Length: 299
Image (tube, rainbow, N blue to C red; front, side):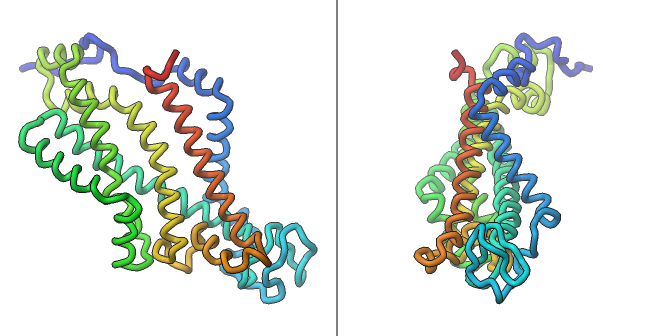
């Protein structure tokens, strides 16, 4: 009976994250700062019930449109002010971080698994399955991402499950294309040929030999894709067809404050700054990962 090939038997070792790569990441100050900002938003969202001074939907009638950094209103102090219903903006921004990051992570993980799995199968087996998937991908690419999600949400209305599916339905295409292209190149590599010659099974070749070597570009793409998902969710919530109104979301908060920009600028400004800072930090951190994980970017 043929024994599975071991890691020591392949001609090329599987690429892995090394301490040297970690040192390269730490030497990129912009990426480190961006990563810390993302972690800060993540901690803020996870610990929102403990950190937020008020419940996000608590109304304070005595403090309608209270200005930020101002004196206490009705015995309460609101660091970032309140909105047109007297709700504390700081608390709502903290809870909104949870929504944006959670949706981003869920959608990215779902699209990563689906796109990578289909891409690996198409790239390795080729044939009719690859041809059919290529036609499906070409059809989906003909529709703009945000317009596609907008059409789905307009039909279903504000709903978290529908929002995840709308953002993920086409989002897997990018992961599919990257995985398929890398598998097409890897399936003929020396280490895969050696493992195949030693009697390795197809699942072993796909998941033990090929997959670890295509992970770096997928990690970079997942990081950058998360920023796109956050923007898409905020855009749909701004239009009123994303997150349900009862759940604090940054896009909804910006929409609520657009009518009061002249008299109460803080209602839309602070949630908008939160979106800008998080998306910018995710993109900068993703760029730092790309510089390290993509050999073509190294000098």
